[in-house]
Length: 366
Image 1 (cartoon, rainbow, N blue to C red):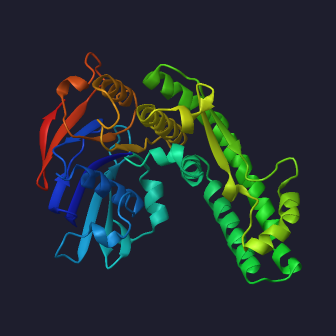
Image 2: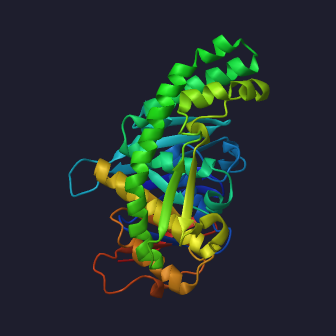
Image 3: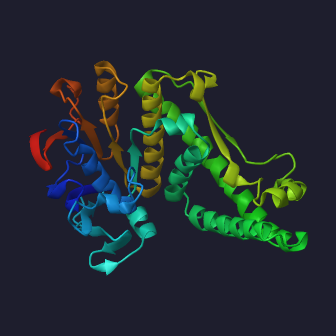
């Protein structure tokens, strides 16, 4: 999948803009507060119907306006003659409306059509904060590569929600346990899917990390969220007393933990911010590559703030690695230098855009 056009109106500081990205690497450069990240946010909004930096969607609407809208044209990879599909996302009074062509659609259908992966300034959360961020990373890939994942995940979430509600209402043990068979069935199947995906994903991460950092010494380990020696049913049964006291279910894949070990050490404690960034890029490229194989359509990579935590040499290596990715990418840069782009590689095609005072223009292209 590639984006052939992005058009926005009344989004943040932009009255309107049109962005026709290159199918390869796109560099968006300009001064601080010029609107570079807002362009990435527009792409993210048009693919996820959400923002990666606004707490409330109303923040996306330009001051003095009541509605913000982003439209994208999505084309399939390859030389086919199928015309691009038009999607639009509108934000008004905190409500979001998704349309495919002129027909009302859903966030799920949009996400399926437009896989987009983000590396932003908050990437350190994947390493330094709770397991929820690492679970989301793992499940993002599963959503695209395994058809059974989403309905299975919804089954588990529904059973977990109902069991937790029964716990909060202090219902009898029998009424609480009524949700156990569904919780266990969906939960164990969900864990199996995660483990199978992780086995393939780990090798792919090692491949991309070798290109970025010159080492493949990373291990991805998944803790189930319960004592697997007991089995999920036994873990839930043994934990019932504590669950009733606290009002929520402790054991299950909703508490799974993806652990990252780099150079045989905990990546959370022994990896610098610069290494974290490159490791995060390797993890994203690995997931995107697996999705591309499963769907024959490559996700778009969004990378905000190229310079942050990286020397020029590491910036060059990152861009050289992006050039090896089959899909489209969009990168923001504060102080762009043409010399950062690798030379002597016929596959390295890119376009540079300058963003200034809410305006977007093409600066150069190859």
